[in-house]
Amino acid sequence: MKRCSSNLRGRQGREAADGARPLPPYAGGHDSVRRCRPLLGTFVEITASGLEEAGLSHAVAAAFTTIERLQNLLSAHDPASELSRLNRDAALQAVTVSPETFAVLRLADRIATASGGAFDHAIAPTLAAWGLLPANLRRNHPGNWRDVVLLRQRQVRFLRPLALDLGGIAKGFAVDAAIQVLIEHGVESAVVNAGGDLRVFGPQPSTIHLRHPARPQAFARTLSLQHAALATSSPCFTERGWHGQRVSRLVNPQQAAAITGPVSVTVRAPECWLADALTKVVLNAPRRAEKLLARYEAEAFMLTA
Image 1 (tube, rainbow, N blue to C red):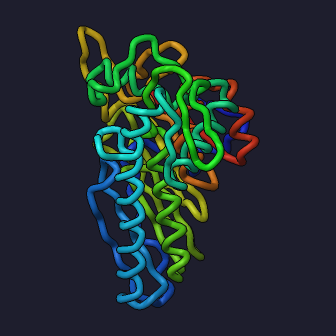
Image 2 (tube, rainbow, N blue to C red):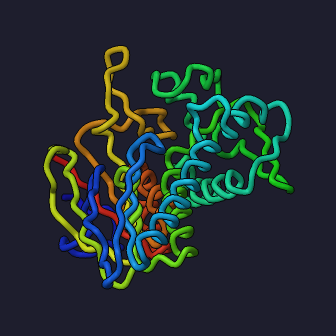
């Protein structure tokens, strides 16, 4: 295990890999429900307690509806999504987007700016060239995050031909949105887990089982998480061959190179969008990540073989 930040704690509870599996949260004497649906390119599992069963079922259904709406807005694979409309038109004219899409773009811009581009949501052309995103997202000499201009009245304009992929932040954003819906419905304790990007709240901690990138079929250890979010980035589930080299969904944008091999970075942060985005910063710029982890009261671990 390699420590990636001066803002890290001991080995007892901050290591993870993709596929974290939470146990049910504290039920507090009330009913508890667990539901799972295929969304966001993975399986999203919601476990909630603290209300009668009918109230919990209604709250969980509302949370899934919110996640599905965000998926329909932010998918780079869906030609009808708002993100796809941006990628088609924003280099030609300003495009007005929904409050949710604009919020994600503002958060992405914040982390891209703070990290000096170690997080870059304009990597879609690279992923498309590797066959990991639709071919229509390829661009000749594409721009980067600096060429995405956020204007008034939720308008977005690209200064150069480029294409966005929000996969590095949108899943965490959707987890946070689902948590907010559950809280608004009166749920007292819950876990929302989107393929290892998860967030928990409630009076008791939740136990999280974590995988190791070199042996993804086995759990590395367990940890206790309370009122916090956890996200992991690892190439081990998306790595593939491409023209004699190895590529994955994880990109070092400053080198246009794939991150490959048995490595994973896990970040604990107050919100899941932040944990999700910071994993890429730790992978691509560990030294710069130290300051960001401290600024956002987050912590990180890197696991290797």
